[in-house]
Image (cartoon, rainbow, N blue to C red; front, side, top):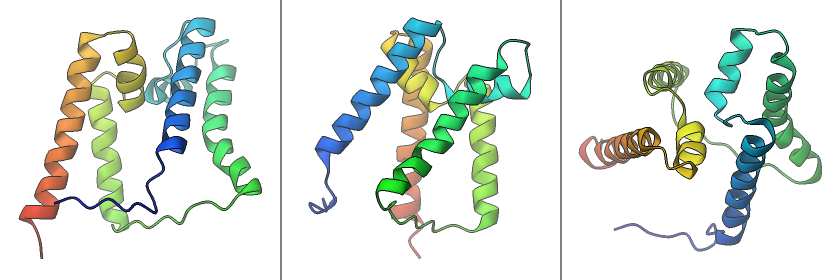
Length: 145
């Protein structure tokens, strides 16, 4: 039975964050004609095309710089990772492989693709959400040590 930690339940900040992400993705698509999928933006930096690098670098710099700017005005939440470096490397590689096979990442499919009513994004989002649910179930309920 799930337990809700009411002290950490923050629906208003989550709603505001979701609205900001949606607004930013919509503005990016409307103003630039581009999808705000992180893997595609980062991948474009790894395969440089003349005249296409500045906005990609600015986007990634914003992703890295926003938490740093936030840290100036507020305390960042504590990060606790319960995995070793090997597990993190394997997880990162699996995410990268899945991103290539799925033709995009969670932000590209889940935020941008679903808002465009893309069937491919619906299938991809259902697949990675289902896989995530299954892994959490297996790890928490079948592999209890």
